[in-house]
Amino acid sequence: MPTELMFREDPYLAVTSARVVAVTDRGIELDRTIFYPQGGGQQGDAGSIVRASGERIPIADTRKGDAFDSVLHISAQPPSTSMLEPGEVVSLELDWNRRYALMRLHTALHVMSCVVVAPVTGGNIAPDKARLDFDIDMSALDAERIARETNALIARGVATETVWITDAELDARPELVKTMSVQPPRGGGRVRLLKIPGIDLQPCGGTHVKNIGEIGGIRVLKIRSEGKRNRRVEIALA
Ligand SMILES: [Zn+2]
Image 1 (tube, rainbow, N blue to C red):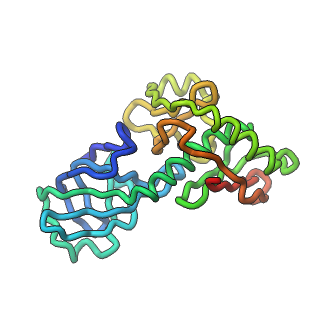
Image 2 (image 1 turned 90 degrees about the vertical axis):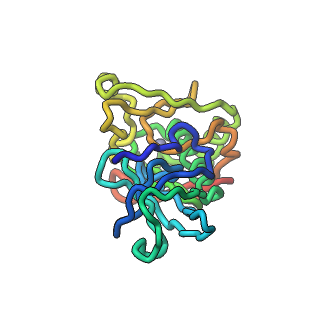
C-alpha cells in the first residue's frame, strides 16, 4: 500500500506520528512518513521510530518498496527483534542535521548544473559531499570558476517552487531532462519539477531548501575524469 509522503508537502517536517502497517525482513512500512527513500541520487534518511513506551528503534536507511510510493524504513537492528505491531501508533524522528545537509547539497547541485552546462551522466548526494558527472571536456571545467559562479547564483537568495506536470507535458519538453542517468520520477501520471525561478527548472523527486540562500555557499572538492563521458565535479558546503 502506498505510504503518504509527507516530505513532498513539507521537507522541513522533522517529527511526526504514523501508524505501523507492516514489519517484514525488508523493513518497516508506515501509513505515512517524513523519511525520504533513497532515489534520484539522494541518500535515504536516517533517524528513529519511537514507541509509546519510549523504546527507540534506530532507522539506518530508507528505501523504496516494490509498490508505487511504498517506503521501507530499515532498522539498524533486524526488525524481527522489534516488538512493533501493525496498527501501532509511533513517533517518527528524522536525523535532521543529516537531512538538512542533504537538502542544501541537493539544491546546490541544481544550481551548479546551470553553471556547468552539459549533459549530466550521473550524480550522488551524501550528507558530507555531493557530485555530478558531466559529458564534457575536462578543459571546460575550472573549479575556481564553478565555485564562484555557483556561489553568485546562491547569493541571489531566490525561493524554490514545486511544479507538477503530466507525463505527456514532460515528453513534449525533453529539454527539461538534463540528467541522462536518472529518469524523472514517473509512475503516477505526473512528474514533479523543482523550479528555481530565473535559474533552473528540472524534474526532481528529492527534498530541497525553501530558499537557495539556505545553501550558504559551496566549495569544489575535486574535479576528475571517471571516463570519457563522466567528468566528475564534487562539492561540499562552504
Ligand atoms: Zn534533484
